[in-house]
Image 1 (tube, rainbow, N blue to C red):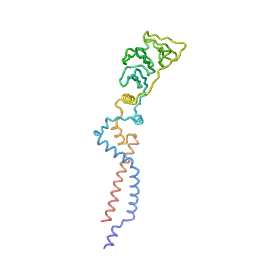
Image 2: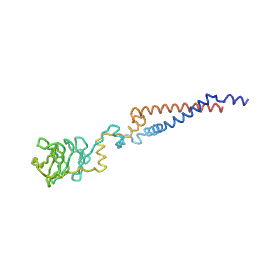
Image 3: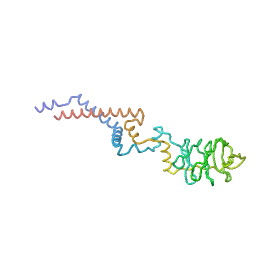
Image 4: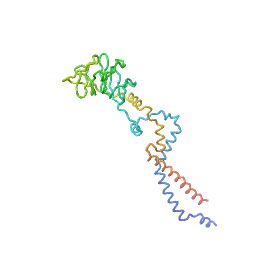
Length: 259
């Protein structure tokens, strides 16, 4: 009777081959999809706690990610003036430290501090600032300013600017621009911003920016890698279904033999 019982539970040749095949591919599918499974699991747990972790308020600073999402990273040009920083973020406005100062035509090309005021040069106009950094005047083409301005600086302690390769002695009070046949311009030099201020200006230039919640959502769905990422996650999901079905079948066959 015991021999008959063992014979009835002995797996057939087909069943043994199928079990070997499933074991082999069960392991291969699991290892192949491991990274995707981990990514989906970890991001899923984090997204379940979005509020507690304040993921929507955490801004992404990675240049690679920002570029990947289509954000245009600003090229910041800055000049120190009277203990402050004058900056151009690549747009139409200048900033004094972290505050928007004034509209200025063209890119920022120089800034010179004089005794009574500071002179700022963009490509198509000059700005006059008080020692406190308040805007006094725009001086543009209507006042005969040569343009486009290439540089602003000093020529033997006098304010000079260079425009289209020519050198001009600049009198911003009398609004006179006298071309010099010779002279040496010592241009104002830009400098690197303090790290904290640079980060603040970049965040301002990027607007609302990119937050961690969006990145994790796209990583969870695979959309961070475009169409191919979505297909990869879909294939991993199918792989998980195969793992569940093959695992259940192997468990069921083993349970039947033990019964």
